[in-house]
Length: 143
Image (tube, rainbow, N blue to C red; front, side, top):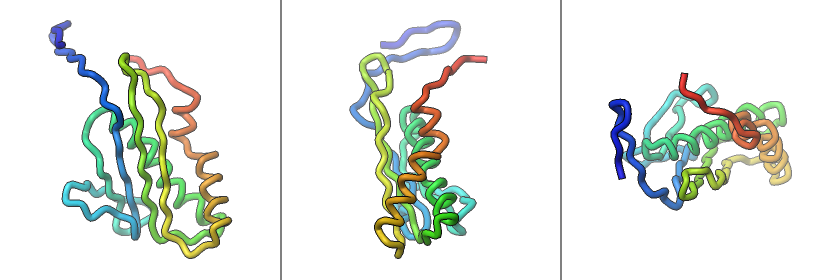
């Protein structure tokens, strides 16, 4: 159903079950033809993004991109060598477009011991800024 209000068209569409995004860097970059490449502070080849361009996908992409960056940032001080990272994030919305949450999985290409990688993942989950902001909630207002 669509309505015209103040010369802006608003359409209500039923929420889809999940909006998945995948970001990859290093040895875990995507080779999909539709993947978009962005420059990246920690890898010479950049980051690949596999996602549709919808607001729902972009919300999940913000979380996934932040987690990927923080794996690289936090790995160095912990002494964990990282050759590649892939983060898959997905989440849905209820009938009133309230988020049902974002879930993410991290794949890391590393020769580090599994306990060192687990410590890195725990640290990233504690410090990743976008997931922290989303967990606490925020207001979003038109200027």
